[in-house]
Figure 1: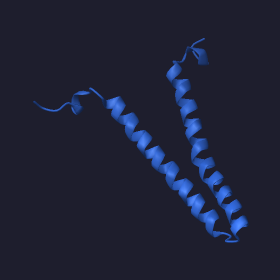
Figure 2 (figure 1 turned 180 degrees about the vertical axis):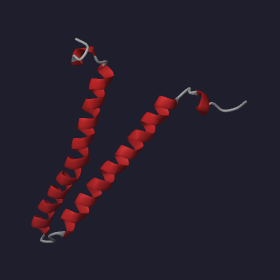
Figure 3 (figure 1 turned 30 degrees about the vertical axis):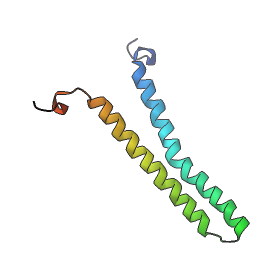
Length: 88
C-alpha cells in the first residue's frame, strides 16, 4: 500500500526523532537546572534566588544552543548553492 510508513524516506523518521529530541531538550534542561538551583537554595538558605538563576541560565543556554545549531545546519544546507557563491 502507498500509505505505509515503511515507504517513506529515512529522512522523515530522522526529522521526527530530531524534533522530539529538541522538544525534550527545550523543556527538560531549564527544569533540571531549576531543580539543581532548588537544591542549592535548600543548602544555602537563599530560596528562591538560585532556583530562578539556574532556571534562567538553563533556558538561555538551551535557546542559545538551539540558535547556533540552526545556524550551522542552515550553513551546511546552503553550502555550494548558487546564491551563496561569491562573484569573481
